[in-house]
Image (cartoon, rainbow, N blue to C red; front, side, top):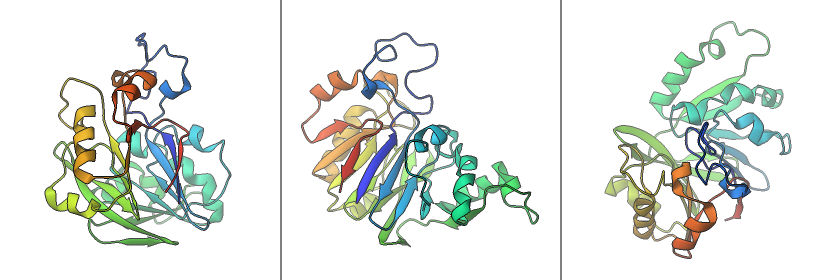
Length: 253
């Protein structure tokens, strides 16, 4: 199983528009972060996790092949704004999207032209499926377990797929949900920045503490702002088993 990080940045991406900080001026490609998304692949199955506003840019360099599923974590713009750009993939058939009940309902409102009785030619062909925490989803040769995390006061979804757990935009997780991550080898989790508490996102120290709680062999940090610091410098401060992810990084799991 291979996981490729298509984007590791927060809602505004990095560099941040109008900013002249050292991170936004950095020439290191590791400091360029598109909005969060990832591609999970086996020899027979291809799954996209989130589909934000940078999806077109992220997918163009990759092979044009069907997605067996698109997993959405929540309805926020930086995680769903690229869904209309899935329309070329409809040559392979309807695109199956899995999301929480609230996200499914919101998509019907925000993209009403995709869910009418009479679709106009060229409209994305989307099949919506409700993902329920603790109820596994089988997609190809993958078993996917949705888990619930709290994005501030908003319940959203993370996903455990075999030895991988992918969690973004988390502030807290209930103890019962954390038990579902027992035995995870590779943890992907969010950290917005280094300091200054945020009402709905973890800081880097929170992510490190969460990684220790889960006990994963290795952890990769995503959904970072420019305030995470320079990639090289921040990585040097982290334990060896915890790294900042970067756009284009591929892991074998």
